[in-house]
Image 1 (cartoon, rainbow, N blue to C red):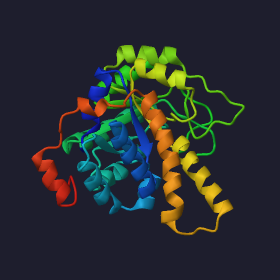
Image 2: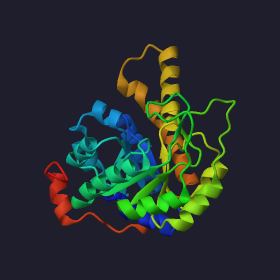
Image 3: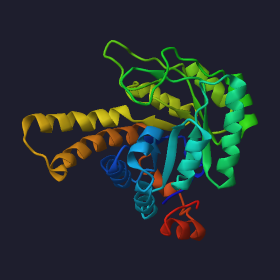
Image 4: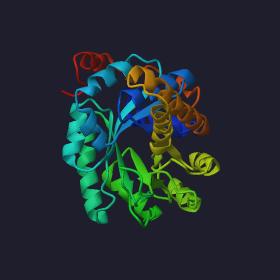
Length: 305
């Protein structure tokens, strides 16, 4: 089942669970996410960073759309951290059902203007859009970037931002970072900020940099309005740790021999996150959302051509 982010997260927010957005860098990660979501009857988001989109190429998403459309589980195909209108348009042409415009490093008014323009484009073709306010940190070991010093989201500014841009979801900065935290660093999320934002903003909130944070804080964030949590590094770390182990102890070179155990390790992480987010079994809360018109477009090669 292929639906929009707004359709997906409206149900999640109402029922106090979060949906994992898992960064898919190739077909192995796509298999890991889709198969574990189906195994647990859990909704899931297939997140694609612009650098991943560049690597995968546009044609890959014809397969992605067909695969998730045929599934009984609800999926969203989402552009993660889109940095320009051009990247938004490319994702739309590839058939994504949700996009993110990340103007978080811009001055506030410029972020509002860029996000509003992107929102108008996304809504014109019937897909959802995520904005970001505040900055996500970086541990220095992720291609997704981030900043050295986090700028926390101001709750009053968040309210103004949502009202002026019309975004469907909002990524907030409460102390998370992209990548795997070094062993000597223990992140602490600012739950007081999240609580205040949730009281002022009525749309689903998004947590970026969801890897390596304490499970207790992640679970608490879900109760405070977070409906989408981005996971990339934890899953990829598990996958490639297994790959390195296999390659260092064997002389295999066939992908069909090497990759299956790597996919299993990635699925273990996805399984844990879906249980943590309380999304297991929640696919039953969704009715078949894809319309006959969408079906025709999916089967002819693109949602929005």
